[in-house]
Length: 61
Image 1 (cartoon, one colour):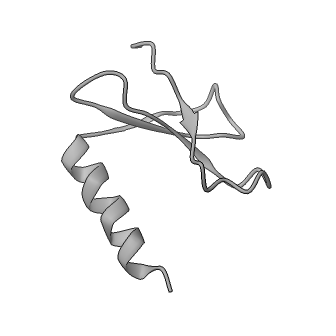
Image 2 (cartoon, rainbow, N blue to C red):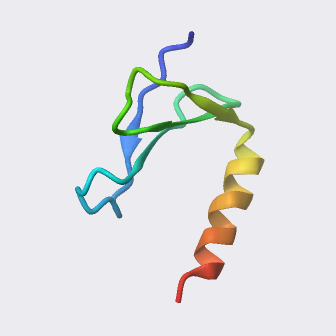
Image 3 (cartoon, helix red, strand yellow):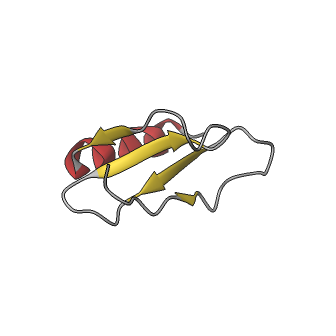
């Protein structure tokens, strides 16, 4: 497995309900549950991640 460098979002509230994202290995965006750092990792194309996060921003009140 590649050595992903995961970071938490600056929006993370510290309640343990967050994901970590790694963008250090092009062309991959890796996502994991911050509570299970040794658990599964979801890998996406950058365009798919960008579309997902853009949709989340549109849905915010």
